[in-house]
Image (tube, rainbow, N blue to C red; front, top):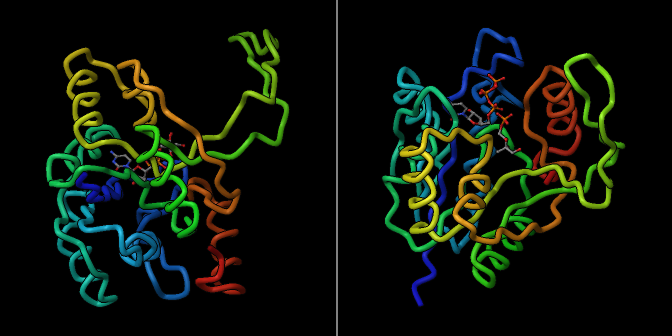
Length: 232
Ligand SMILES: Nc1ccn([C@@H]2O[C@H](COP(=O)(O)OP(=O)(O)OP(=O)(O)O)[C@@H](O)[C@H]2O)c(=O)n1
Ligand SMILES: C[C@](O)(CO)[C@H](O)COP(=O)(O)O
C-alpha cells in the first residue's frame, strides 16, 4: 500500500486575539518566526514527502524567503489561503499528491516528533486520528443569561489539537461536502465526522499549545529562551 504522507500547514490567519500588528505566525522566537519552527518539526520526519504552506496572499514571498534562509526541506508549495481556516486548508489539500494528509496549525510550533508519529500510526491503522489532551478543568455549559445549564462528565472531554491525520481522499470528500452544504467547522475532524467516518483520538502533550493570546506568546518565548528546540 502507498503510505505517502503530505502535510498542510495553515498560516493565513490574522491573529486578532493576539492583537499584535504583525500576524502571530511571523513573530520571532529567538530570532526565528513561529511558523518556521512548525515547518521544521515536520520536515525532520522521514515519513513526510511533501509540505504545503498556506499563508496570506501578501505573505507568500516573504515566507519563501524565510524558508530559504532557514533551509527548510520538503516545502513543495507556498500558496495563498482564504478568509476562514477551513478555506485555507481546502486550498492546501488541492496541492497534495499523497495517500495520507496531516493538517497542522502554523501556530503550534512545539509539536513533538513522537506525537506526530503516534498520530500517523493510529490514522494508518484505523483510518483517521487527531491529537488531543484530556481537559484539566471542570467544563460547564452556560446559557445566554450566564446561567449554568450542564456539567458534562470530564472523563469524556478532550481539548483537540493538531496534527489531524486522514486519508487524503476522505478529507477531500469531507471538504467538498462541507463546501456544498455551507458547513463551517473549527477543525478538520468535524468535517470528517459528518461523513460518519470514526476519528480516533491519541493523547498528545499539553506543550503543543496553539499560540492564540498574549499569554501563549509569553510562554512560547520563555520555553524557547530556556529550552530551545528541547521544548518539544
Ligand atoms: N483564514 C485563516 C484563518 C486561520 N488560519 C490558520 O489557522 C490556524 C489556527 O487558527 P487561529 O489560532 O484561530 O488563528 P487566527 O485566525 O490567526 O487567530 P484569530 O482567530 O485570533 O484571528 C492558524 O495557524 C492560522 O494562521 C488560516 O490559515 N487561514
Ligand atoms: C484546529 C484547532 O487547532 C483545534 O483546536 C482549532 O480549532 C483551530 O483554531 P481556532 O482557535 O478554533 O480558530
